[in-house]
Length: 328
Image (cartoon, rainbow, N blue to C red):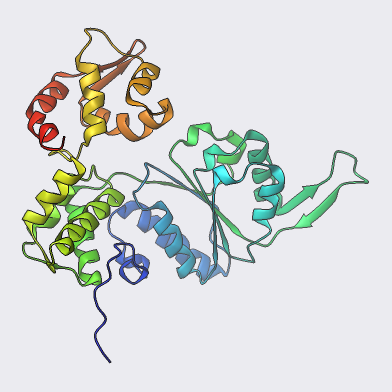
């Protein structure tokens, strides 16, 4: 049988973990899931209702897929923003069969009345149709499914809904070491060759502790290599990929450096809505995709009066002026 050429997609299904033991990172979360899986198999019951809490891009959806594989179940996946009404929630919950998994990403984005429908369904295993008149109310029996929800902001959930989850799985950012192992595993499965194994560590250092970003950079490095007709990925290809994306030593891009420059100009804090207006993004996007990392690494601070740049932020900005110039 002829050898298959390397895939050009970093998320090719053949390259992702097929069993939970192959999953890199989130050790405590994985251990708790394995215990719950073993208990479910021993008791002959479904996996418990669970909520996965943590930043975006750290493996929540991937682990849910692995849970469904381990349970021999089908996974039905939906983004909360696409479930806009009680009727749509009912329709979604009627799709899975017994022991299947209904996965709702960014569950905190559900409207309050839809959250009520969801937690009542979780509690009773039933969906109630019609009004308050008992004679006109219809009851639909749901399959004995598992609800797995993911959230980056669980505080927005109604307390009765939060209380229905038996497993609360707290995800964290990855260490550079974990990202390096994950990248090496993925590249090996994809059949991508590296000139220097140190390339993985360099990618990890610019990935903000986030596997999704690390894999995106790895894919960009390969794209640069293939554009030059090369099959072996090198440090030179990595440097070229970083220049294309405008990434500096911390993995900040042009938008993040623009944010820091805005804060560096005034002598007083700047409010979020002002920052968002000057950057051209919504306040929510700025808070979730830009500020979280800058706060984590100490480049900015927050107060009731607004955002301010720290001394470390000023130093980083000054050290990376060359990167901004090189990338136009």
